[in-house]
Image (cartoon, rainbow, N blue to C red; front, side):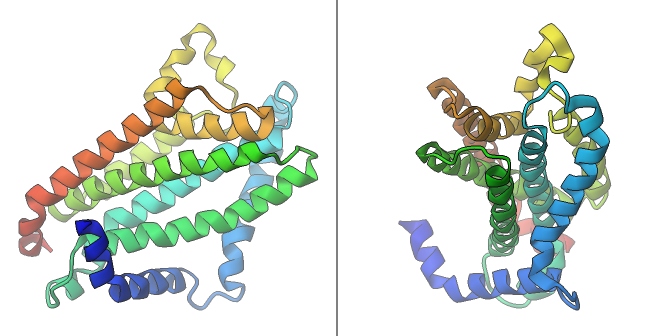
Amino acid sequence: MNLINLYKRHKFVFTELVKRDFKKKYKRSFLGVLWSMLAPLFTLLVLNFVFGTFFGRTQEYYTIYLFSGWLIFQYYNDATNGAMNSLMANASIFSKVKVPKYMFLFSRVASSSINFFLTLVIYAVFIVAYGLPITWKFITLLYPIACMFLLILGIGLILSALFVFFRDVQYLYGVFSTALMYATPIFYTTDILGDKQWIFYLNPLYYYVTYFRSVVIDGVIPSIEFHGVMLAVSLLLFGIGCWMYKKYNYKFLYYV
């Protein structure tokens, strides 16, 4: 109930921040919000052209396979990077006005989530174009999306707190994001590691990518255990993020 009351109390501020972040991304852009759909499409076409030659022969519906992985990673990457800079970018506001600092982070993640859902429209068009059936099982995709939202919030809370104290976190995280992209089976198939495929289970993004592919391409809903692991990882990182934010929140004003 406390969270609900906080949201009601700061609903106007939160809404305005989301609008500002969303508009700022496409400021002075001729196509505006259409870039949310066109940019992923152009990237997908390039990636499909480059990697489809190598992996498209062995993987059925490779374009959808690739799109599923790229969709998840782009959402994660855009949201966490935006969340990391959310405090420093709004330091001039919360240092003068009494407003919950996490509101800036939540609004930035919400803005990235809007972009993600817009990209899902293009994703759905591709699914239909490739003749894959859209069934009731697609509703279950809301589960990995919700879990990923929690994961992103958790990592965002951690990164934003660290970035206040250590500015070089952004460079380290840039390297980490690149490594994570190649460590996630986005372009390639999981059998590339042979009997060492268990390594993928150490990568949280693997679960979300696999869930989407399983439902969309194979028409199969993952096991209960798979659902449990996804939720556990998301709650763990979200819990760590909340703990870190609460512990160091009072120090932020001294470092911004």
